[in-house]
Length: 392
Image (tube, rainbow, N blue to C red; front, side, top):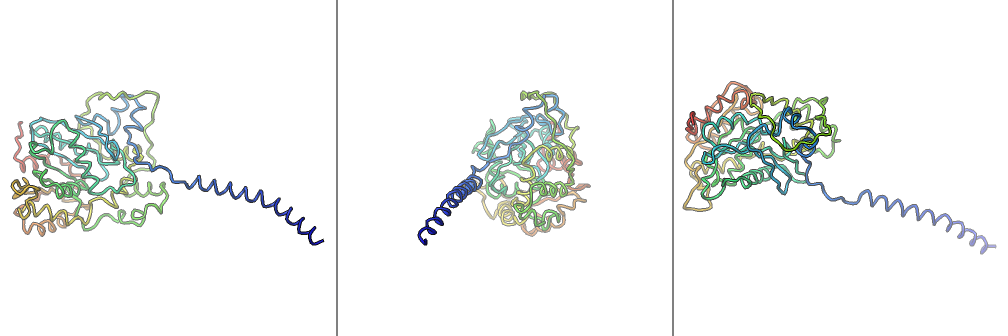
Protein backbone atom coordinates (compact mmCIF):
# COMPACT_ATOMS: atom_id res chain seq x y z
CA UNK A 1 0.00 0.00 0.00
CA UNK A 2 2.81 2.36 0.91
CA UNK A 3 4.59 1.58 -2.34
CA UNK A 4 1.40 2.27 -4.29
CA UNK A 5 0.89 5.63 -2.55
CA UNK A 6 4.54 6.61 -3.13
CA UNK A 7 4.25 5.67 -6.79
CA UNK A 8 1.06 7.70 -7.15
CA UNK A 9 2.63 10.73 -5.36
CA UNK A 10 5.76 10.63 -7.56
CA UNK A 11 3.72 10.44 -10.77
CA UNK A 12 1.52 13.35 -9.71
CA UNK A 13 4.42 15.58 -8.65
CA UNK A 14 6.42 14.81 -11.76
CA UNK A 15 3.43 15.89 -13.81
CA UNK A 16 3.35 19.18 -11.87
CA UNK A 17 7.13 19.66 -11.88
CA UNK A 18 7.62 19.41 -15.63
CA UNK A 19 5.49 22.43 -16.56
CA UNK A 20 6.79 24.35 -13.51
CA UNK A 21 10.39 23.87 -14.62
CA UNK A 22 9.48 24.83 -18.18
CA UNK A 23 7.74 27.99 -16.97
CA UNK A 24 10.70 28.91 -14.77
CA UNK A 25 13.10 28.37 -17.67
CA UNK A 26 10.95 30.54 -19.92
CA UNK A 27 10.79 33.28 -17.27
CA UNK A 28 14.55 33.14 -16.75
CA UNK A 29 15.15 33.41 -20.48
CA UNK A 30 12.81 36.39 -20.72
CA UNK A 31 14.56 38.15 -17.83
CA UNK A 32 17.94 37.57 -19.42
CA UNK A 33 16.69 38.93 -22.75
CA UNK A 34 15.26 42.06 -21.16
CA UNK A 35 18.27 42.74 -18.92
CA UNK A 36 20.91 41.75 -21.47
CA UNK A 37 23.37 44.62 -21.86
CA UNK A 38 22.72 46.46 -25.11
CA UNK A 39 25.39 48.20 -27.15
CA UNK A 40 25.71 51.71 -25.70
CA UNK A 41 24.23 54.52 -27.76
CA UNK A 42 27.14 56.86 -28.33
CA UNK A 43 25.37 60.02 -29.46
CA UNK A 44 22.00 61.69 -29.79
CA UNK A 45 21.86 63.21 -33.29
CA UNK A 46 21.22 66.91 -33.77
CA UNK A 47 18.47 68.50 -35.91
CA UNK A 48 20.96 68.26 -38.77
CA UNK A 49 19.93 64.58 -39.00
CA UNK A 50 16.52 64.55 -37.32
CA UNK A 51 14.98 67.62 -38.97
CA UNK A 52 16.83 69.12 -41.96
CA UNK A 53 16.54 66.05 -44.23
CA UNK A 54 12.75 66.27 -43.99
CA UNK A 55 12.09 69.95 -44.72
CA UNK A 56 12.50 72.16 -47.76
CA UNK A 57 15.18 74.81 -48.23
CA UNK A 58 12.64 77.57 -47.68
CA UNK A 59 11.49 75.95 -44.44
CA UNK A 60 15.09 75.56 -43.28
CA UNK A 61 15.77 79.21 -44.05
CA UNK A 62 12.80 80.28 -41.92
CA UNK A 63 13.91 78.43 -38.78
CA UNK A 64 14.91 80.52 -35.73
CA UNK A 65 18.36 79.00 -36.23
CA UNK A 66 18.74 78.36 -39.98
CA UNK A 67 21.61 76.05 -40.99
CA UNK A 68 23.05 78.85 -43.15
CA UNK A 69 22.78 81.58 -40.51
CA UNK A 70 26.55 82.09 -40.38
CA UNK A 71 29.11 81.93 -43.21
CA UNK A 72 31.50 79.05 -43.77
CA UNK A 73 29.55 76.16 -42.20
CA UNK A 74 30.99 72.66 -42.05
CA UNK A 75 30.07 69.49 -40.22
CA UNK A 76 33.00 67.67 -38.63
CA UNK A 77 32.78 63.95 -37.86
CA UNK A 78 34.53 63.12 -34.57
CA UNK A 79 34.69 60.18 -32.14
CA UNK A 80 32.03 61.97 -30.07
CA UNK A 81 29.61 62.72 -32.88
CA UNK A 82 29.21 65.25 -35.66
CA UNK A 83 29.79 68.89 -34.71
CA UNK A 84 28.96 72.13 -36.50
CA UNK A 85 31.74 74.67 -37.15
CA UNK A 86 31.64 78.06 -38.89
CA UNK A 87 34.79 79.71 -40.18
CA UNK A 88 35.23 82.77 -42.37
CA UNK A 89 37.27 85.92 -42.84
CA UNK A 90 40.58 86.80 -44.51
CA UNK A 91 43.00 83.86 -44.53
CA UNK A 92 45.87 86.04 -43.34
CA UNK A 93 43.82 87.74 -40.62
CA UNK A 94 44.15 87.48 -36.86
CA UNK A 95 42.69 84.09 -35.90
CA UNK A 96 39.92 84.13 -33.28
CA UNK A 97 37.85 81.29 -31.78
CA UNK A 98 34.55 82.27 -30.12
CA UNK A 99 32.90 79.95 -27.55
CA UNK A 100 29.24 80.44 -26.61
CA UNK A 101 27.40 79.66 -23.35
CA UNK A 102 25.60 76.63 -21.95
CA UNK A 103 22.13 77.34 -23.37
CA UNK A 104 22.66 79.40 -26.51
CA UNK A 105 23.92 77.99 -29.83
CA UNK A 106 26.63 79.56 -31.99
CA UNK A 107 24.57 82.38 -33.61
CA UNK A 108 24.51 84.30 -30.32
CA UNK A 109 28.12 85.33 -30.91
CA UNK A 110 27.58 85.75 -34.66
CA UNK A 111 27.24 89.56 -34.58
CA UNK A 112 30.49 89.90 -32.61
CA UNK A 113 32.25 87.53 -35.01
CA UNK A 114 30.94 89.54 -37.98
CA UNK A 115 32.23 92.75 -36.43
CA UNK A 116 35.68 91.24 -35.89
CA UNK A 117 35.73 89.84 -39.44
CA UNK A 118 35.07 93.36 -40.77
CA UNK A 119 38.16 94.43 -38.83
CA UNK A 120 40.37 91.85 -40.52
CA UNK A 121 39.99 88.78 -38.30
CA UNK A 122 39.63 85.15 -39.34
CA UNK A 123 36.88 83.91 -37.03
CA UNK A 124 35.69 80.45 -35.99
CA UNK A 125 32.55 79.58 -34.00
CA UNK A 126 31.31 76.11 -33.09
CA UNK A 127 28.10 74.72 -31.66
CA UNK A 128 29.06 73.08 -28.37
CA UNK A 129 28.06 69.46 -27.86
CA UNK A 130 24.28 69.01 -27.60
CA UNK A 131 23.59 72.54 -28.84
CA UNK A 132 22.54 73.84 -32.25
CA UNK A 133 23.61 71.43 -34.98
CA UNK A 134 26.17 69.48 -32.93
CA UNK A 135 25.35 65.97 -31.71
CA UNK A 136 25.06 65.17 -27.99
CA UNK A 137 27.65 62.57 -26.91
CA UNK A 138 26.51 60.07 -24.30
CA UNK A 139 28.38 58.09 -21.63
CA UNK A 140 30.99 60.83 -21.31
CA UNK A 141 31.10 63.85 -18.97
CA UNK A 142 30.76 67.20 -20.67
CA UNK A 143 33.71 68.69 -18.84
CA UNK A 144 36.63 70.95 -19.68
CA UNK A 145 38.51 68.06 -21.30
CA UNK A 146 35.67 67.16 -23.68
CA UNK A 147 35.23 70.80 -24.74
CA UNK A 148 38.99 71.23 -25.18
CA UNK A 149 38.94 68.27 -27.55
CA UNK A 150 36.06 69.89 -29.44
CA UNK A 151 38.10 73.05 -30.00
CA UNK A 152 41.02 70.94 -31.27
CA UNK A 153 38.66 69.01 -33.59
CA UNK A 154 37.41 72.32 -35.01
CA UNK A 155 40.93 73.68 -35.50
CA UNK A 156 42.18 70.46 -37.08
CA UNK A 157 39.29 70.47 -39.58
CA UNK A 158 40.19 73.91 -40.94
CA UNK A 159 41.81 74.35 -44.35
CA UNK A 160 44.18 76.74 -42.58
CA UNK A 161 46.73 75.98 -39.89
CA UNK A 162 45.49 77.04 -36.45
CA UNK A 163 47.85 75.03 -34.25
CA UNK A 164 51.04 74.48 -36.25
CA UNK A 165 54.33 76.19 -35.55
CA UNK A 166 53.80 78.56 -38.48
CA UNK A 167 50.19 79.37 -37.60
CA UNK A 168 51.02 82.01 -35.03
CA UNK A 169 48.39 80.62 -32.67
CA UNK A 170 44.96 82.10 -32.10
CA UNK A 171 43.04 84.32 -29.70
CA UNK A 172 40.00 83.03 -27.83
CA UNK A 173 36.77 84.70 -26.72
CA UNK A 174 34.51 82.93 -24.24
CA UNK A 175 31.04 83.89 -23.06
CA UNK A 176 29.51 82.47 -19.84
CA UNK A 177 30.27 78.72 -19.88
CA UNK A 178 32.46 79.52 -22.88
CA UNK A 179 34.62 81.68 -20.60
CA UNK A 180 35.32 78.72 -18.36
CA UNK A 181 36.03 76.56 -21.42
CA UNK A 182 38.39 79.21 -22.82
CA UNK A 183 40.39 79.46 -19.60
CA UNK A 184 40.62 75.71 -19.13
CA UNK A 185 41.72 75.28 -22.75
CA UNK A 186 44.34 78.01 -22.37
CA UNK A 187 45.62 76.36 -19.18
CA UNK A 188 46.16 73.11 -21.08
CA UNK A 189 47.50 74.66 -24.29
CA UNK A 190 48.94 78.09 -23.42
CA UNK A 191 51.42 77.90 -26.31
CA UNK A 192 48.49 77.92 -28.78
CA UNK A 193 46.82 81.05 -27.39
CA UNK A 194 47.86 84.62 -28.14
CA UNK A 195 45.17 86.55 -26.25
CA UNK A 196 42.12 85.93 -24.03
CA UNK A 197 38.85 87.87 -23.87
CA UNK A 198 36.16 86.82 -21.38
CA UNK A 199 32.53 87.96 -21.55
CA UNK A 200 30.63 87.37 -18.28
CA UNK A 201 32.76 84.27 -17.73
CA UNK A 202 31.88 81.14 -15.83
CA UNK A 203 34.63 79.07 -14.29
CA UNK A 204 35.16 80.54 -10.86
CA UNK A 205 31.60 81.51 -9.96
CA UNK A 206 31.00 81.56 -6.20
CA UNK A 207 27.42 80.43 -6.70
CA UNK A 208 24.96 79.65 -9.48
CA UNK A 209 21.16 80.05 -9.64
CA UNK A 210 19.41 77.84 -7.11
CA UNK A 211 17.83 75.73 -9.84
CA UNK A 212 21.28 74.50 -10.87
CA UNK A 213 21.92 73.20 -7.38
CA UNK A 214 18.83 71.06 -7.03
CA UNK A 215 19.08 67.43 -6.03
CA UNK A 216 17.63 66.41 -9.38
CA UNK A 217 20.50 67.89 -11.39
CA UNK A 218 23.00 66.18 -9.11
CA UNK A 219 21.31 62.80 -9.47
CA UNK A 220 19.39 62.93 -12.77
CA UNK A 221 19.19 59.14 -13.02
CA UNK A 222 16.70 59.23 -10.14
CA UNK A 223 14.30 61.43 -12.08
CA UNK A 224 12.04 60.48 -15.02
CA UNK A 225 13.17 62.07 -18.28
CA UNK A 226 9.88 63.97 -18.70
CA UNK A 227 10.33 65.56 -15.28
CA UNK A 228 13.93 66.47 -16.11
CA UNK A 229 12.69 68.22 -19.22
CA UNK A 230 10.23 70.20 -17.12
CA UNK A 231 12.98 71.17 -14.69
CA UNK A 232 15.26 72.36 -17.49
CA UNK A 233 12.42 74.35 -19.05
CA UNK A 234 11.68 76.00 -15.70
CA UNK A 235 15.35 76.74 -15.05
CA UNK A 236 15.82 78.39 -18.44
CA UNK A 237 12.41 80.05 -18.65
CA UNK A 238 11.39 77.99 -21.69
CA UNK A 239 7.95 76.82 -22.74
CA UNK A 240 6.93 73.18 -22.57
CA UNK A 241 4.10 73.83 -25.01
CA UNK A 242 6.45 74.46 -27.91
CA UNK A 243 6.26 71.87 -30.64
CA UNK A 244 9.03 70.40 -32.80
CA UNK A 245 9.21 71.86 -36.29
CA UNK A 246 6.71 70.11 -38.52
CA UNK A 247 8.22 68.08 -41.35
CA UNK A 248 6.85 67.13 -44.75
CA UNK A 249 7.88 64.98 -47.68
CA UNK A 250 10.47 67.39 -49.03
CA UNK A 251 14.15 66.72 -48.55
CA UNK A 252 16.61 69.45 -47.69
CA UNK A 253 19.32 69.30 -50.34
CA UNK A 254 22.02 70.91 -48.27
CA UNK A 255 21.81 74.18 -50.17
CA UNK A 256 22.44 77.42 -48.35
CA UNK A 257 19.26 79.14 -49.49
CA UNK A 258 18.95 82.92 -49.15
CA UNK A 259 21.50 84.75 -47.04
CA UNK A 260 20.17 85.43 -43.54
CA UNK A 261 20.78 88.96 -42.15
CA UNK A 262 22.19 88.91 -38.62
CA UNK A 263 19.67 91.56 -37.61
CA UNK A 264 17.01 88.83 -37.65
CA UNK A 265 18.66 86.99 -34.74
CA UNK A 266 16.17 86.20 -31.98
CA UNK A 267 18.18 84.46 -29.26
CA UNK A 268 15.15 83.51 -27.17
CA UNK A 269 13.44 81.95 -30.19
CA UNK A 270 16.62 80.08 -31.16
CA UNK A 271 16.98 78.64 -27.64
CA UNK A 272 13.31 77.61 -27.58
CA UNK A 273 13.67 75.99 -31.02
CA UNK A 274 16.76 74.15 -29.79
CA UNK A 275 14.88 72.89 -26.72
CA UNK A 276 11.97 71.70 -28.88
CA UNK A 277 14.02 70.09 -31.67
CA UNK A 278 17.37 68.91 -30.30
CA UNK A 279 16.66 65.61 -28.56
CA UNK A 280 20.00 65.72 -26.78
CA UNK A 281 19.87 69.27 -25.42
CA UNK A 282 18.23 68.47 -22.07
CA UNK A 283 20.75 65.75 -21.25
CA UNK A 284 23.65 67.92 -22.42
CA UNK A 285 22.52 70.87 -20.31
CA UNK A 286 22.25 68.70 -17.19
CA UNK A 287 25.58 66.99 -17.97
CA UNK A 288 27.28 70.36 -18.35
CA UNK A 289 25.67 71.67 -15.15
CA UNK A 290 27.21 68.72 -13.32
CA UNK A 291 30.60 68.50 -15.02
CA UNK A 292 31.28 71.66 -17.01
CA UNK A 293 33.85 74.35 -16.12
CA UNK A 294 31.33 76.62 -14.42
CA UNK A 295 32.63 76.64 -10.84
CA UNK A 296 35.72 75.52 -8.91
CA UNK A 297 38.15 75.96 -11.81
CA UNK A 298 40.59 78.06 -9.77
CA UNK A 299 43.56 75.78 -10.45
CA UNK A 300 43.27 76.27 -14.23
CA UNK A 301 42.78 80.00 -13.85
CA UNK A 302 45.78 80.37 -11.55
CA UNK A 303 47.88 78.41 -14.03
CA UNK A 304 47.05 80.71 -16.93
CA UNK A 305 47.42 83.81 -14.74
CA UNK A 306 50.95 82.65 -13.91
CA UNK A 307 51.70 82.33 -17.63
CA UNK A 308 50.43 85.84 -18.30
CA UNK A 309 52.54 87.14 -15.38
CA UNK A 310 55.58 85.28 -16.83
CA UNK A 311 55.90 83.08 -13.76
CA UNK A 312 55.45 80.15 -16.14
CA UNK A 313 56.64 80.06 -19.76
CA UNK A 314 53.51 78.19 -20.82
CA UNK A 315 55.48 76.39 -23.49
CA UNK A 316 56.92 72.89 -23.83
CA UNK A 317 59.95 74.58 -25.34
CA UNK A 318 62.05 76.62 -22.93
CA UNK A 319 63.33 78.78 -25.79
CA UNK A 320 59.92 79.94 -27.02
CA UNK A 321 57.56 81.07 -24.27
CA UNK A 322 53.84 81.45 -24.86
CA UNK A 323 52.71 84.66 -26.50
CA UNK A 324 50.48 85.12 -23.46
CA UNK A 325 53.56 85.87 -21.36
CA UNK A 326 53.62 89.47 -20.15
CA UNK A 327 50.25 90.19 -21.78
CA UNK A 328 46.84 91.35 -20.59
CA UNK A 329 43.42 89.74 -20.40
CA UNK A 330 40.18 91.61 -21.18
CA UNK A 331 37.13 90.79 -19.04
CA UNK A 332 33.75 92.38 -19.81
CA UNK A 333 30.77 92.30 -17.43
CA UNK A 334 27.16 93.40 -17.54
CA UNK A 335 26.31 95.77 -14.71
CA UNK A 336 22.87 94.14 -14.26
CA UNK A 337 24.10 90.56 -14.60
CA UNK A 338 22.75 88.46 -11.71
CA UNK A 339 24.40 85.25 -12.92
CA UNK A 340 28.03 86.34 -13.26
CA UNK A 341 28.61 88.97 -10.58
CA UNK A 342 31.30 91.41 -11.68
CA UNK A 343 32.58 92.20 -8.19
CA UNK A 344 33.05 88.54 -7.25
CA UNK A 345 34.91 87.50 -10.40
CA UNK A 346 37.04 90.65 -10.57
CA UNK A 347 38.08 90.33 -6.91
CA UNK A 348 39.13 86.71 -7.45
CA UNK A 349 41.05 87.53 -10.64
CA UNK A 350 42.89 90.44 -9.00
CA UNK A 351 43.88 88.08 -6.20
CA UNK A 352 45.17 85.51 -8.70
CA UNK A 353 47.11 88.12 -10.65
CA UNK A 354 48.35 89.89 -7.53
CA UNK A 355 47.05 93.19 -8.89
CA UNK A 356 45.51 94.68 -12.05
CA UNK A 357 48.61 95.05 -14.19
CA UNK A 358 47.69 92.08 -16.38
CA UNK A 359 43.90 92.31 -16.48
CA UNK A 360 41.57 94.94 -17.91
CA UNK A 361 37.97 95.12 -16.67
CA UNK A 362 35.16 96.76 -18.62
CA UNK A 363 31.43 97.01 -17.84
CA UNK A 364 28.46 97.54 -20.14
CA UNK A 365 24.95 98.51 -19.13
CA UNK A 366 22.88 95.32 -19.36
CA UNK A 367 22.35 91.84 -17.96
CA UNK A 368 23.84 88.47 -18.85
CA UNK A 369 22.77 88.72 -22.49
CA UNK A 370 24.86 91.83 -23.22
CA UNK A 371 26.94 90.18 -25.99
CA UNK A 372 23.76 90.39 -28.12
CA UNK A 373 22.09 93.55 -26.83
CA UNK A 374 25.36 95.51 -26.61
CA UNK A 375 27.29 93.77 -29.38
CA UNK A 376 28.51 96.99 -31.04
CA UNK A 377 29.92 98.23 -27.73
CA UNK A 378 31.55 94.83 -27.08
CA UNK A 379 33.07 94.82 -30.58
CA UNK A 380 34.49 98.26 -29.89
CA UNK A 381 36.02 97.16 -26.59
CA UNK A 382 37.65 94.12 -28.18
CA UNK A 383 38.86 96.14 -31.17
CA UNK A 384 40.47 98.72 -28.90
CA UNK A 385 42.03 95.98 -26.77
CA UNK A 386 43.54 94.24 -29.81
CA UNK A 387 44.18 97.51 -31.70
CA UNK A 388 42.19 96.36 -34.73
CA UNK A 389 41.64 98.63 -37.72
CA UNK A 390 37.97 99.59 -37.97
CA UNK A 391 38.15 100.31 -41.72
CA UNK A 392 39.90 97.11 -42.72
